[in-house]
Length: 168
Image (cartoon, rainbow, N blue to C red; front, side, top):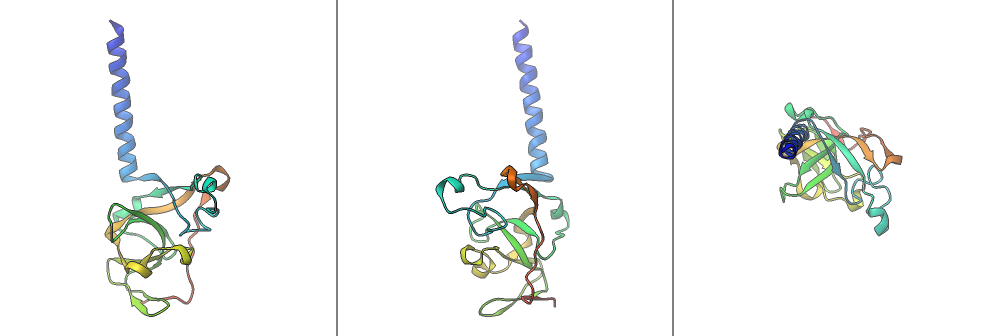
């Protein structure tokens, strides 16, 4: 007769752990895989072969920055694609609201509530050069650390591009 109560206790504990994990993942932080070469060499520095692409970097995304949209030039963010909200991208912030960003063909003014993002590997990146400024409401969090693979565990540096951005 003790088996049903043991199973019930295990089920309750698993449910509780699941709810707590989901809450932490939604509100505070989550772990996200980085696919592709658009942020190389910062993430996935070696994606030449099939075997190497199986060991994509995993990064820690903190979400506390979303409460008041506190971002800085050079932050790496995760955001939903403006073209397809089911896709998530990881790129670096180049311009913030009010900035003027120089592109190959033009100078773009970043409107309020938006940011300009670009991949570190410009030759292989679908970013603001393709779809324009990204609404801050699409941002899902800031990447703070590389967690996987173990030999690459480190914090993510904030890098800024010089001579491309001028504040308003």
